[in-house]
Image: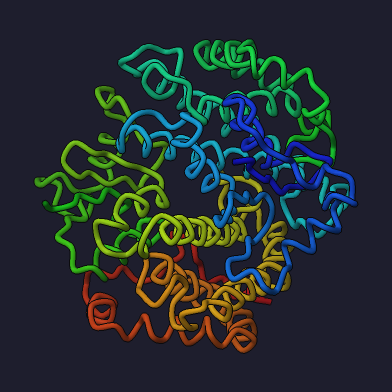
Amino acid sequence: MTYQLHYWPTIQGRGEFVRLALEAAGAAYVDVAREPPSRGGGESNLGRRLGDPDNPRPSFAPPFLVDGDIVVGQTAAILLYLGPRLGLAGVGEADGLWTHQLQLTIADCVAEAHDTHHPLSTGLYYEDQREAALARARAFREERIPKFLNWFETVLKRNPSGDLHLVGDVLTYADLSLFQLVAGLRYAFPKAAVRALADTPAVAKLHANIGRRQRVHDYLRSPRRIAFNEDGIFRAYPELDG
Amino acid sequence: MTYQLHYWPTIQGRGEFVRLALEAAGAAYVDVAREPPSRGGGESNLGRRLGDPDNPRPSFAPPFLVDGDIVVGQTAAILLYLGPRLGLAGVGEADGLWTHQLQLTIADCVAEAHDTHHPLSTGLYYEDQREAALARARAFREERIPKFLNWFETVLKRNPSGDLHLVGDVLTYADLSLFQLVAGLRYAFPKAAVRALADTPAVAKLHANIGRRQRVHDYLRSPRRIAFNEDGIFRAYPELDG
């Protein structure tokens, strides 16, 4: 079965957490909006599908995943669905739940990273909320990045199976998502991220290890990996890095 | 088995979504931090448990739920765990997943509601970020509340089993959480909520119906229901209601 991922075609964004899971598992998938318009690609087709009046279970926003009759939206719910199918959710109910709890905490940090450049409204340009962005970014850099990364460091250090993975001694989508979170923080807040990672060596090591896994390594160097850019969640605005 | 809920003892907050599910199902539970300190209650005991160095799977923040050997944090993950056990998750994998997707979208709106009074930093007082709060609250009132409630209206209207429930024709934790979201919006943004609910009659009807269910009705009038207040997520600051 080929999975269909529907997400904005020009950014990593929240869709990237799903792309990474599919890529790391070697799953067959189509990143539909990145296909030519003649094959259903492009933002207008994505918007049309999102607004399809015949869909009884529409998603609030991209990404959403189609797998036969199943249509599921919300990044964490997509990973909850894919996890056991791709062998990326740990073993058993307790580990699956813990993997999901980790993912939801990563999602909280991702949402906060987004709000550093859009603290007042997603309907305003960054330039029109820059003063508030400076204040929000400072709190994010000084309080939130260390708090989140220290928590993940604690989780790794307390893992009875060792600190190479967040859940047991197997790769899960939480590991992949933490890799992506760290990659995003390093892009958007290079100075703050380096400082925080100096205090969280297990997180830094996980990030390096995941990036060296063969399939992830190949994906990151392929044209399928969209480069970070200033339309996405993680944006390199130097003034927000202090 | 008596569930143990661990959450701040003086606010509804995110814990209220768990309390509502437990109450609506008539489940046996202890709201631990609201017990006397001699029985493990109080904020200091909550903080101690959160920081317990022997817990291999600590939560990032309250709420967390203890059920025997299982400890699970993150509101949506707690509900994912409780849903099938309390008969509040729909029937089968697809409905369980859809229930969770709805919950995650409710959680997104709840996080945005929180940020109307803390748009710059959770580490600053409201009074010190009031100007930014006015701007963020305006965007939330004018754009986000209608967008979220219209989406839930669409979900209800397209439900093939009728518009009394979000998932099929059974009560789920998503219904209870939408009830709580609407209750919170009506408390914090009475004028904006009334306007939005006038355009979303199925959402308004669901809110009224859930509040009339016997167990929910009894809970809401019991001392177990903490009143909304200005330490919680939904805060009645009239200036933020426009």
